[in-house]
Image (cartoon, rainbow, N blue to C red; front, side, top):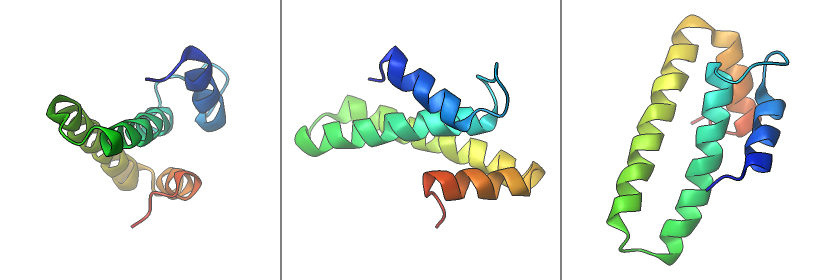
Length: 88
């Protein structure tokens, strides 16, 4: 679970402008942080299938946002992918 301080830090690092909270870049960064934390949780608790389902949902949501950026804004896509080390 992200604390408010962690979330605001992630938003500041990937925001396009001062009041940006909903751009695809910010959403991808927040999802990536939550995915990392949930992955660590699932390494300890291997049988937690409810959290695993949430993780898969978050990964799919992040892929949707990445596909949108890749299609409509290739420069922004490559910048966020490089910044978060998400390129395949």
